Length: 217
Image (cartoon, rainbow, N blue to C red; front, side, top):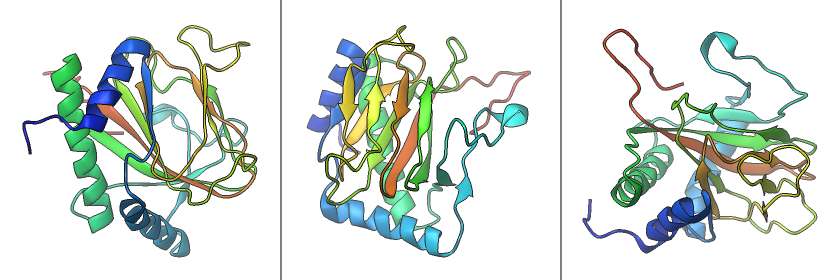
């Protein structure tokens, strides 16, 4: 891994520092995105996507009143597409740690497919102080996405999750990467009017101890 920071990763790091979130268009090239789209479409054809739930471990449940997407987790060395993306996120982890000293230790991610009408209501990705997720990422995989297709990401100001207008509406365009602080930034996926593809991920710190193991997921 190069010791020189990636310019896009530097911009993301600065956005996290300045306002708690960043939106980087064209983070990946069209060719790189197609590798991931092909993988997701194969998973869809093989019916390997599962209904997404909310909560962790014993509290995990599927609730279609809150979210309506299907997912499949990425695994390094399982296929070239997964390995490629997880390596890109490893480089981002390295650069964020260098710039912000967050102690990001590991990363987990899943493909996400929202059908027409799919959404995810306003939420935080991590409870305050839980430290199980520190920085969230969303990469969009939607060629030729147009305004009116829906499925936008609404980002809200920290501490104002109820009733306020969003600070930013992100169109889920191909190659755009959104990054935000998991405990501080409430957000929602607005209803999609056509199929919407993405990869959602989370950087975590190592919260395991001698009497407590905190594995991925």
